[in-house]
Image (cartoon, rainbow, N blue to C red; front, top):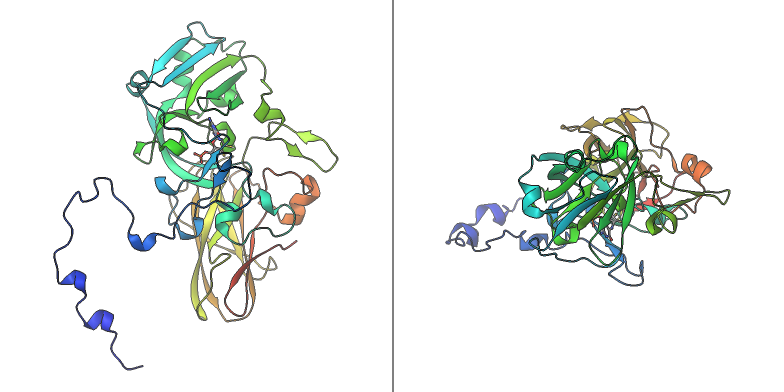
Length: 390
Ligand code: MTE
């Protein structure tokens, strides 16, 4: 007990030798001690790794910005690394002057940089029924948040002379093999949609659509078309394959709900969370993320007794529109079993539902848009488990 800690009393090798030279890694790398913090696939989730997903390790991330190398990935037919000099972006359909832009054409236009979350509509899809996966990486890791830079789509539609009187929709199309296309309303296209090349101050990563992707704030990830090559302007929705065969919600009465694009208000505690363990009783900072596709986060409440009592968490600034918001809550663990939950409220007044409230309306076959309150059970041993609380 009274032995001095040699880690502080004895000089360590790194304080008695010359360090590495500058530009040893011309492009910086994380420390080798951080090797476990990785995007991960869920074994057996998909038949092939090209039509699959790699989840972001939310449990090990700080603040609200996702490091580019940890951004989640969701591809329908694998990712491609497109030569930007060969990349073209076209606007056609109900426009006076159909145009083809090179990357150089786009990057000399007035640009904006805005921080937004992106969440796949299928995030938390495995949890509609029973508890399916153990950690927050797999329950909520189809979620990331970046500062995106690009041209507002509005400028480009104006540049091509879109027929704003009669056109009501646009169709966005990608350049990969998946033929992914998505219909977006003209009202949204003229609001805050960005044709983006920048992600956290550098070019997009190939996995995330390099050199060009659509940023559709608040809307499910599938509409954020990657390797964006074309936008068509039209007067009706296209009902494309990713709007009819997939990305529709199976309702309990057997009907299918289409074009449910907005990611409703949601939150999750990222630490302590499933798969982690509390080492001793005493103080813990409960921390996590809240977001809403309809605007800013107004409030996050925390329960440590499975939803019986709630107390308000502190929200870190900045609190931005359609962006992740970090919350913190001080908690002293007395060693008895606890169930940790977070419940977010957005600026429209919408309150994140419990699982039973959500299932009462949506049933359990929806796949998409599961924004129910997440529960983490702390056992007497300190181990934390994913549990469902009605
Ligand atoms: N765009 C193209 N061209 N091809 C794709 O497979 N996947 C979509 C969307 N855009 C996809 C695409 C889906 S389903 C999601 S959730 C997001 O991209 C994921 O973006 P990310 O891989 O950058 O996280």
